[in-house]
Image (cartoon, rainbow, N blue to C red; front, side, top):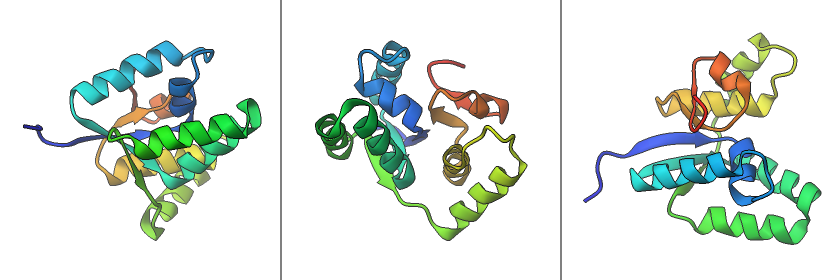
Length: 140
């Protein structure tokens, strides 16, 4: 029987690391994903993050690898796709307005999703998450 559902929010930094063995954070990403699966944790993948992941993989590794990765994410029970709503988009933009210039709007979306789902856990490796009080699973 599954225990109470726990959530973490995915960032493209971890998703790319997870699916590409040559990535510097691959081992950390795999170990973290295995741990999340073992503890019945759902990885919330914002639609914007899925799009960014597909775009980066397509540009860096090719269209076919992007399709393979997309299939793995979409067909896995570990990930659920969530689309942004007006409330989350406004919260993301509010965060974006107060962050340093190097912070991407996409990172603000990840943090706003974490707030929306009442978690501090992010499956992502960007330093900005830790600076804002979130836990980067596998690193912090």
